[in-house]
Amino acid sequence: MSTAEALVLDFGNVLVEIDFDRAFEAWASAAALPASRIAERFPRDAAYCAHECGELDDHGYFEHLRRVLEIDISDADFLEGWNAILGEPLPGIGEVLSRLASRFPLYVFSNTNPAHLAQFAARYQPLLSYFRRTITSCDIGARKPQPEAFVRMAALTGAPPSRLAFFDDLEENVAGARRAGLQAFRVTRPAEILAISESLAPVRKAG
Image 1 (cartoon, rainbow, N blue to C red):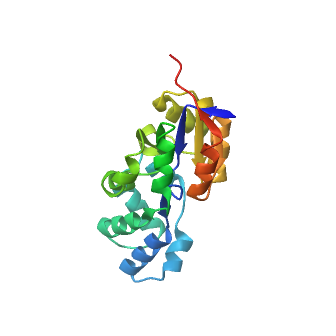
Image 2: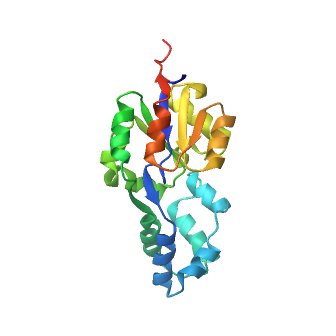
Image 3: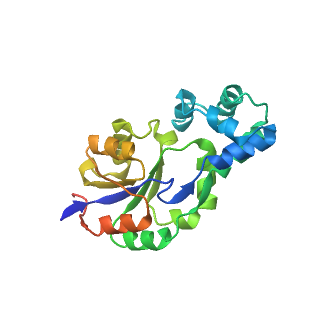
């Protein structure tokens, strides 16, 4: 049986449902354009990554979107659509977290941005109460799947990478975690997290 000192879970589509289409629809409504046009033009580009690494603030990112999407809407309209991406906790995740937390320290590790991070504490407080800490790309200045992001995250947990079990819905992030030395698993629903965690034996921190 493998061992783990702590479990690290992604946020989007592991704990909480995420859907960018809601943003596209909101922005399209504000701009009086078809949502399909917004979706076609939306880039996950250098500015998107800089926003998630804390290098570009919300205003700067929305100004970038204003140019690349070719829509003239306010920062408030952008923010409303941007926050609409965040959905509800996945069905059954609370029960799974309760069982996991009885055996392991839990951490969140998310690629996210200042606008969304501002929503986390108030909106998802019951869910996040199971976790020792929420670690984000915009706080550590690096994002998944870069191995350096996982190294920085592991340092904040106090556990060596090899003793962390990481769960994410994206294969590229799982691959990045493994390159950094973590045990990593792709999951698509809470029951898979529980099943995998039951194959892991908790281990205490050295010293």
